[in-house]
Figure 1 (cartoon, rainbow, N blue to C red):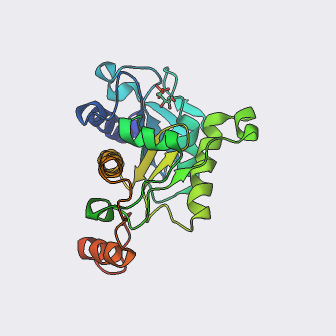
Figure 2 (figure 1 turned 90 degrees about the horizontal axis):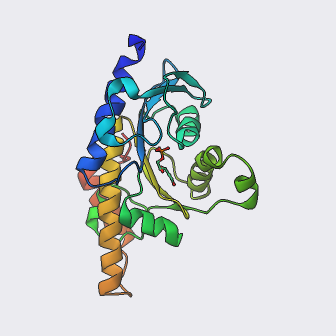
Figure 3 (figure 1 turned 90 degrees about the vertical axis):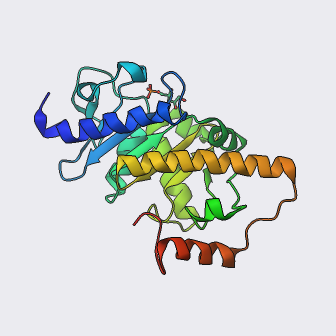
Length: 233
Ligand SMILES: O=C(CO)[C@@H](O)[C@@H](O)COP(=O)(O)O
């Protein structure tokens, strides 16, 4: 393996191995990638390989067009989604996709996750968005490639930057998170799953549960991250 990619293979491997430890994946669900924007490539989990069989050398090197640059294994089936986001979002260094139970249930419901409390407000000032499900045209096209644009278009339509919210649900699919580093993206996936579970339980306990007031959300977020801050700093 070309050692010029060793740093991102190691980073991708370590981040992938956190997913089963955090209970965010079952069997071969999900995948993590780590990018090097200067080299224009990322390392991603190989498709269908169980986590306990992974190694840094098995991480597949892919460019931002989704083309395999190095590696004998097939890259994740979500590779084109990762590639689209790295190509258009220069300030991220890691992307995570899981099928974690509660976040996936919200994605399948096609609802955004309302902000019911300060746990959510610690991490984003907005309802966690759910991108609409695939259109017929997208389904006829390249599903995974289109998912990247589904994610970007959803944030754009809501006037959100990828640096103020680092997590999203994809309708009828599952969550994607990102961050400056793969570890931050993994952290975001664990936070998303926890907030999704809390929101689900909140609605079970009280289906009329009120959202947190916007003024308090802003105040709470700024107390945690500083004035005029944004989550992806
Ligand atoms: O989203 C899906 C399937 O819906 C994939 O993340 C999951 O099956 C993992 O696939 P890969 O093993 O990464 O190809």
